[in-house]
Amino acid sequence: GAVVSQHPSRVICKSGTSVKIECRSLDFQATTMFWYRQFPKQSLMLMATSNEGSKATYEQGVEKDKFLINHASLTLSTLTVTSAHPEDSSFYICSAVSTEAFFGQGTRLTVV
Amino acid sequence: LAKTTQPISMDSYEGQEVNITCSHNNIATNDYITWYQQFPSQGPRFIIQGYKTKVTNEVASLFIPADRKSSTLSLPRVSLSDTAVYYCLVGDIGGYNKLIFGAGTRLAVHP
Image (tube, rainbow over all chains, first blue to last red):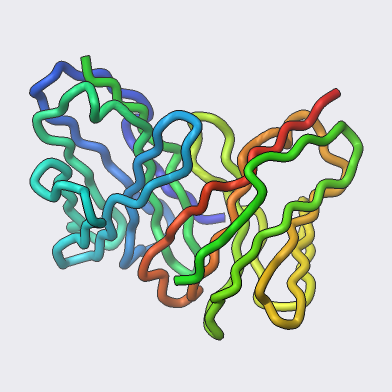
């Protein structure tokens, strides 16, 4: 099946720094990618929808200036958490869509 | 977007068949029903997808009644490794404007 690669799988950063997470569709072109955040014991919460070549659409309550999304090509979308704080610590997951949705393996972000 | 409702949790034992039902009363004509499995600290993994009647693959079956207002994921002879959270999603296969996850069903398989 189609593969979505997410990198890094785990990152620890200091408070106030920025972290970039990459999401790549390895064997298909994805015009749409989704970014999710998941806290322990909770479901995936949609943060934003990323469309190639256009600005991302953010869900209500998600700060677009804090969570910068770039979808520069049909196979790559990036999420940058800017000026990270401990409350941004979470599990971030991307999804790329072709005829169905495929998910990355997730990124565990810990802000210390 | 059709909202989905599933049981929060289920318990089973190894070797048993497990059926998880999802309600989606507002499903639209173009919507497909897709089930995902998620293990801790991993992204969701596709299990099965269907539009109507019954779909079967090597790991599960999906039963969809004629009115399509619900669906049932059937896992035959579960093992300990099937302990996970299961999500049903409803959406237009050709135009996923949003992929919204419900609470999911936490399945615990016991020895």
